[in-house]
Image (cartoon, rainbow, N blue to C red; front, side, top):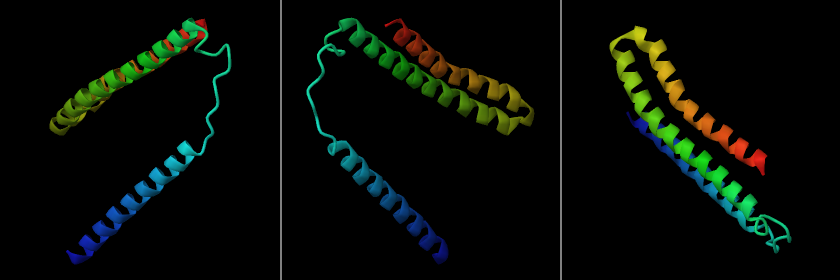
Length: 117
């Protein structure tokens, strides 16, 4: 039991150290970039481009949130069904894959929006 505790503590320490390293690296990368004024004729000068970029971001983000909610519900139900009957695995995977398709549809709509601008 003592050996297991030491192993868990070591794994926890490595996870915390890795997380701290990544946060420091992200902060260095984020704050080391110099900021410059926007070029004339960019997204701020073209309201249609700005609206398209906002729309593409919203459709991708909201579709991914919806896919996450749907996948969480479908996957938990699938795990319960498979634990009771092993032959339900194929049907359960189909429903989980259908929920993941929502994110792909959102990404496709975002590409269609960006191609029109």
